[in-house]
Length: 218
Picture 1 (cartoon, rainbow, N blue to C red):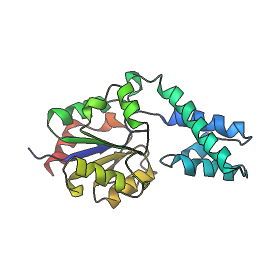
Picture 2 (picture 1 turned 60 degrees about the vertical axis):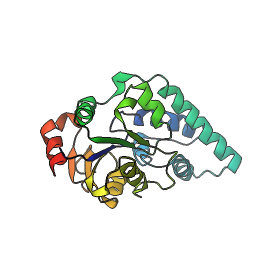
Picture 3 (picture 1 turned 180 degrees about the vertical axis):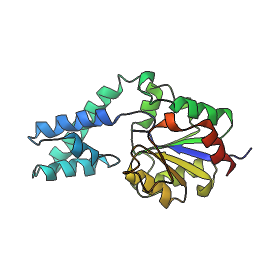
């Protein structure tokens, strides 16, 4: 059988931690008298912590010292981690284990490619870490998506050429990163938002084993 590399983003693909980011960012924004909506939170998806805080400050026309900036970033991460600590297997998005199990049973390469610096902790909390042969997270990369760095490192870790890799992503920047890496991009979410992806599914309940098999054969 052919072997391919399957690379998964984490937030919004395997688990939905976006809600925890929203709660933590909202708490931070409100603490400095800045309103923060779910619409604004969408603009922070896939964006680094530094850039996210810069956006929030610009929305509120706020200027703070570098020390305050660093303190706020640390506080946001502490709040986020307090939510992560309570995570369990029930937080895994529907049918993700079905696909991961099939790939593992058929000796396919499986890697994580996420901007999150907490990726390993989250995978341990939801008991999925053993499904991944390689984990590339925010601690391993210097360039943010849409730069393809995270996925190229993942492909190398799986000993696969980029053109033999398939990426599952829920953000526009992530889909663009996969495309920039010359990999097959599969969007998880809204077709109108993720129109640059090679394929788009609402979630993993729409992805059949037959579809995965076709990708492996290509």
